[in-house]
Length: 275
Image 1: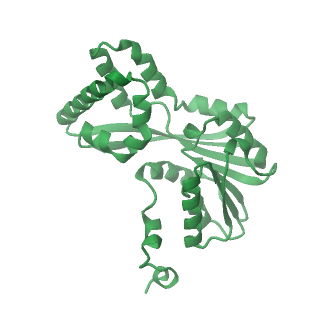
Image 2: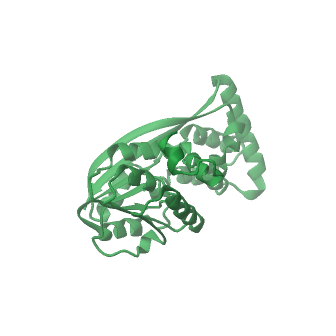
Image 3: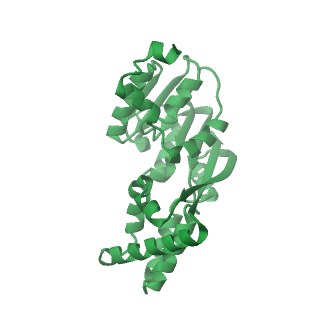
């Protein structure tokens, strides 16, 4: 009998569910963070935008029990789920707070390390969050961020732009480009940190690909539905939406048939800075 079977109720569906939590999407960014984030005994760590607990719990599993870890997120349901998982893992050195990272309920110089996996593009006020991160970090504390940058799904955006032009909607193209570019670049992330008085120590660039059998599969993928489609819809006139996306899907399907698949580029950026 394994250690797992002797210490955890593996026949409990809720316990089993913690093994089916991490999305394929998040794992790519989390891996590069975990490959480079500094680790030592007795650390005090804050995960900003912790969601349901990744990489918070993975870090807790890799560190000693003298280390103290805290997660913060505004998403109440995710925080509740993370607290449930914390109890399943039986972590006594992990705390999770439902709160706004732009106004953190922590003392000055409380943490040795701050991490955020895919958080920076989702913060309502990233400048305020990074300033707060600077405040709550000890000196010389580190902040380690991962994000997807400009160039994300560039193949789709290229076909999207062509579709708009074919439909006589060239005037919308600047809005589409602005939506594509909102994720920022290496330099804008560096500037964000340096404006808050951090010194950038390390920038690592990588990429991976999301592969689909065709455009219909891309549009039906849950990540597209919840993560990308709302932004794409925001740039088109509601009365033309069905026409535009039908045409876009058709063109992506044709491209997939020609190439044998649909392949989308996802740039990955890891940035490490010191106070």
